[in-house]
Amino acid sequence: MAHGAGNNTDNQHQGSKSGSFKCRLLGSGTTDSLSSAAQGIDVYAMADYIKIPETEEKVTLETAANLKQGRGKGTQAWKSAYEDVNGALLETEADTQNESAALDARSDIKEAIKKLLLPKDTTDSSHIEEKINEIFGSKEEEKLKQLENAIDDTIIPAGVAQSDNGQRLGNINVEDKLAEILSYYQLRKNKTLVDLKKKLSNTTKITEPKSTEEKEKVCNSKGKDNKEECKKLAKYGCVFNPKGDEGKKCTLSEEAKQKAAEKANKEEGEATSKASDKKKQEERKCG
Image (cartoon, rainbow, N blue to C red; front, side, top):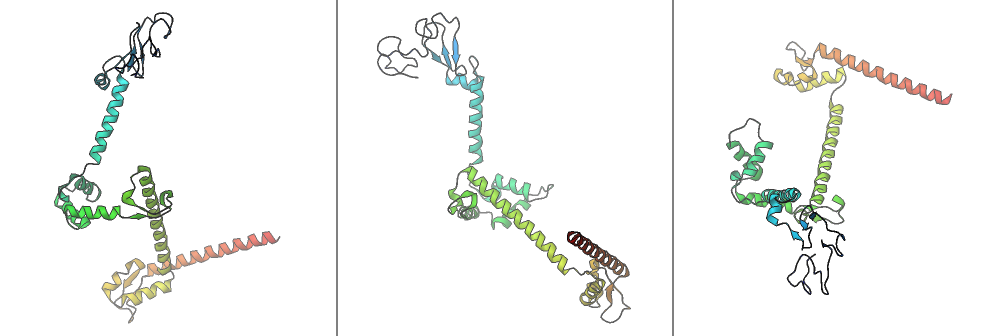
């Protein structure tokens, strides 16, 4: 709302009230302004940034210093806005500052390792240096640069985060896009972990001996008539009997035999029950 033509060559905030360049948008007089009668009080606009005086005078603007400090009539909103923006800028600057030093001298790396990789009650700083060497190969600054370059050169394939083409990770600087990429890989990692657990569970079910005879064979073959080897098979119920037959000194305990038999009977009963239920369902369909 600043003017610079005609009678207002000094770039006033309010245009002339006479001549060829009239502007009464912020006028406070009694003719062609806010009202045909005197206002009686000053009028403030834009959270008290603009003051329209009650008399027929030009408007005035609150100073930047007063707005920052919240001085003046009702300028607290400007102060709060200034503090929020200024605080965000300072915080961003602190978050993105570049440290150039040996890795064991960088507080950010040391703090991250202490919180994420070391036991809670660890106070010995030598453990931090050990972890730095373990992760980076050495504590020289160049090692971190090499790792950062390797990460930046990672190609994010097409299709990830709705991308049509493969992109170099270091060229992506939009936070929303980076967040999508992170979510994608976190979900993929979780799925891989779930799949591996299922595979391991299925493998265990296949390889774990079930019947008494199978468990007895495991004890005999892997125990090898050796007391120490037989101890390693205790989870299968194997025990060492020095008076046992040759090749069968490592044998299945009586307790384990009983449990195996009970389990086998239970499974057989469940299988029979399921078969019977299925047969009844088929008979009902036919009936």
